[in-house]
Amino acid sequence: MKLLIRTRDAVLLERLKDLLTNSEVPFVLKDGSGAESVDAAVGVPELWVEDDADEPYATELLSEARADDQGEYWVCAKCGEENEPQFSDCFHCGSNRRARPRA
Image 1 (cartoon, rainbow, N blue to C red):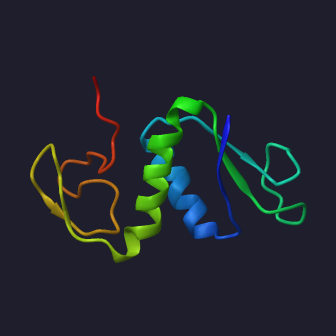
Image 2: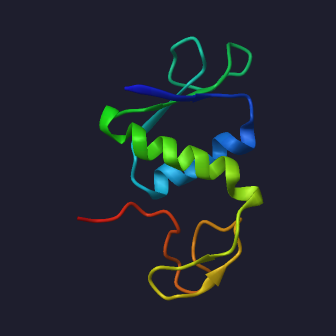
Image 3: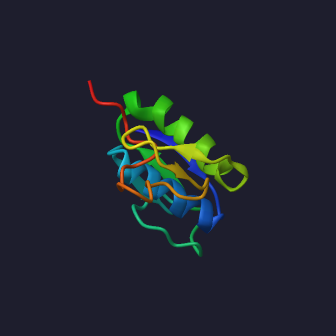
């Protein structure tokens, strides 16, 4: 298990949780004390990636989550619809913007 981020930024944390969930990357939230919960009174929330092999992809998602507010329009790979940068799913077909490529 690898630590991905330690932050009090609740918006960033929620955005990253959504991206990881939609991309099927298993993760665990901890509260800074090692407990698997988020209690801000105990410590700074931490998000851990369960599988070490997922860390590079999760780090990429973290970078994209931080840049989302200043991003550019994106085109859905499935249907070609142009979407606003703040949306993670295609407005037209519902495909996830950052879905992990399937082998």
